[in-house]
Length: 310
Image (cartoon, rainbow, N blue to C red; front, top):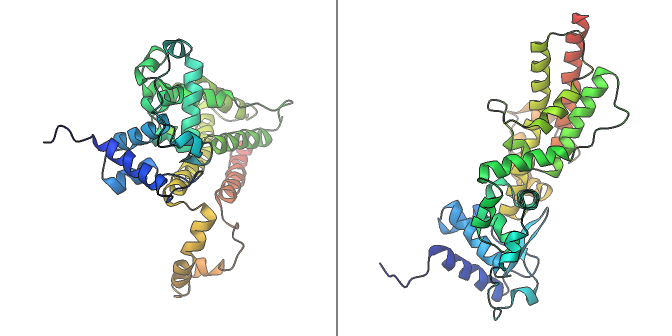
């Protein structure tokens, strides 16, 4: 084995830098995501993450919230510039748990939870990943703290809705808006293996506070059923974020590209339900409309249960 050969991640770093130098990727263009790197170069996710971290530390790329990792401006990505050195010890001492959690949120919101690693978060501060372990035990604890911080940002309306339906609807919409802000959060939450998250529990408690006439076990089932509708529907947010980073197409562009294939299937005559909505507006069926439809029907059914218990 050639001991002088660079490690795999360095080879990929140089190839991506070569594309930038050749003008194939211009400032502001998205660079290959971690998922694309794993597929194109056949490496593990950890190696792909190391590639983007190295490019970021060297000033070649930067993270744009809601977009992903893009080519930095020329003055920040000049080939002659020396790689950015790790900041001095005072940067390390300036870290605290809150700053680490905020940086984790920034990364996950922009790039998805799969791109999050201790090394990736450390790159936001220009320090080694070991510096983070003085503030969080590991990645699992970091993500849990991030989730709690996200729920802590929810502002409950004052005055609170008094009716049970209005309160449950308001709680569901607060969750929905939260998952819009943090696309990774819905997929992180688990119904079968819930995490101890007091902030999240407080929101659910508030949501169900006006329901009366049902036993505690039924109330818990109602709460989890409502939570799961919102969470499961919102799971598509991170899927869409990762798909956009992977393909370079937003949801509308992707649907436009798929339209000829769908039309061919529908016109076969074997799918009358789909044919019935052929020609409807582009936004006739979206994650938002599915959320709204499911929420209304779910509350209709729960209303019958509540009335029966009176």
